[in-house]
Amino acid sequence: MGNLDGTKRRADMSFAIPDPKTVNFAKRLDWERAQRVYFASSPSSLPTLFTHYVEGVGCYDDWTWFQIRRKIDSVAVLEGLIAEGGSVFDPALRIRKEHLEAVCPAYSGAYYDIGPASLVTSLLVLEEGPNEYQDLSLPSPPNNLLGKVRRPALRLHAIDDADLYLHPLCYQVFKERESWFYPSASSRSCSRISLEQSLVSAPSLPDTGTTVIIQDRFPGRNFAHFLFDWITRIGLFCESGVEDLRDCVFALGGAPGRFETLLLEALASEYDLSEEQFLFPSHALVLRRARRLYWFSDQVESYLHPAQMAHPRSVDIIRRVAARVPRAPTRFKRIYISRSDAPRRRLSNEGEICRALILHGFEPVVLSDFSVEDQISIVTGADCVVSPHGMGMTHLALHPGTPAVLEIHQPGSGTDAYAFMAKAMGCHYEFAVGEIGNSWGDYTVQADAVLSAIERLDLGMPSSVHDGTYGNARVGNPENTHPEAGQLDADTTGSPQGLPLNCGDSIMRHVRADPEVFPDTNVAAWYEIDLEPGRLYTATCWVWIPEAFRGTHVELNVGEWPSQRRIPADVQLREQWQQISATRTCPPDRNTGHVVLRVVAPGGDIVFSTG
Image 1 (cartoon, helix red, strand yellow):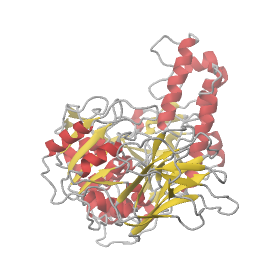
Image 2 (tube, helix red, strand yellow):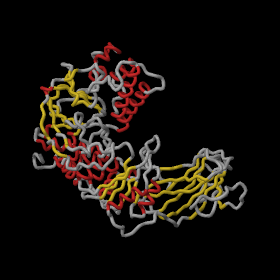
Image 3 (cartoon, one colour):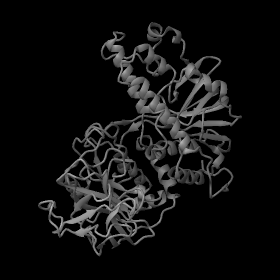
Image 4 (tube, helix red, strand yellow):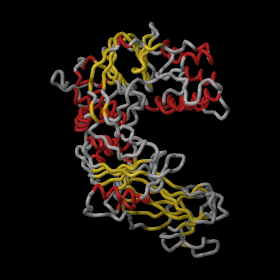
């Protein structure tokens, strides 16, 4: 709709948001309880499982909720309640009444009925049509939407005089007096029992005018869902013309961080909204008999992520909002986004991939080492981005141009969200698929597959290529370490035999000083190394732990900076060489740094390194 009064309310906005620790604690508590009651080692009976499910245990996380339903169905099959391949759940994800009557008769009336469709009005927002970006080249399962022939319609639904249960992690539209609820307007099928306490004790909101539900069953802390689904829904509503925007409140969820706040500031500027119009509940709230409630069909009915299946109108909203997000020029032109800071879905052979990419002018970056503003600037200033599938790729949608994109997919999982958006933006998109990894979801990818995809991008050779190594380091003993620490091993008694490949030609002996006299765990340092701010550095060396070692920890520390990714020594491996490393981006205010070898051990313990 644009501006209603021709003026901007506020350029520098601050949002009243819940404490992330409070929201995360509630989700963690629910998850931990779900693990105990559903997935404990001892078998759970159907009455127990049904009871906890009706009471809403484990409903704050969509993936956990899915696993719970799968567990309950498997037990129901084992106990003969349903046939193999059947389910005790109805399409609204409630336990069917006949199963509750058979197993937990006291809970047979626990759920609300589904309200009559005649009370809901609908408006077509995005028409059904062909998927002009259809691409069958991606394997399944990443190709979950890109391969579809048609794009479903997007509708805006509305109801008057209904109740809204709103929580940072879920919501439900219902009519308490009539005992109805609306599945398409509910991220969870909450029962009367699970809502009972909130209906009694949760504060009721005052009349907020028109309320537009924006959150869905996926977490808003995920950058991709927040930008591709939540931001575009607000934009589409603002452009629908169905309400006076000054009378609207947008109900979101979670605890937004800097990325979400930047986007909301940009969106508010685009549509002349005020900060009071974004509602982030910090606890359960009940809006009684709302004047009018709106929600979208892609929240529950039809999965259209990303950006309503890259509909041109949704992509245009992202483009316009992105243009209002501040960016600064950076030196980064070809980047590889590392996932070494992630708890899972990492590339196990990332070092090999980085070395190959560096020779083609790429620079590895760990986005979490930078502020959100700098993350956006780095990605949106690059001409080519190579990255494993992950949330950091969301920044590509804020790019003002059409960068080349190479996405590395984990085998057997993931989505085509970034591939879809890259194609809609007009980017040259290529992909490589990795190989099965470990139980944490880590995996490998062949360097040849990555380089072949780089060739298909046809980037040409960069003007200059850095070899990825840095020198000018002086070896010595840091303060507060034993004077014998870090000396070249003149006494060969007990020294390791042989040297690993590509590690130099000398062995150093490191003696842990008496902790009572020298409490610092440093046993050697390579110091005054010339570094470049903003560049990612990895320090490595080979260590040898003798059989007599009594310590608990041997590790490297690069720069003495926080939030490092380390591969410490395995102290159980004795009388053999093993490589350790530490990785960190040089802070913006530093141009030199140390690499320190630390040993936690009793005084007199010895380890060897190649320096």
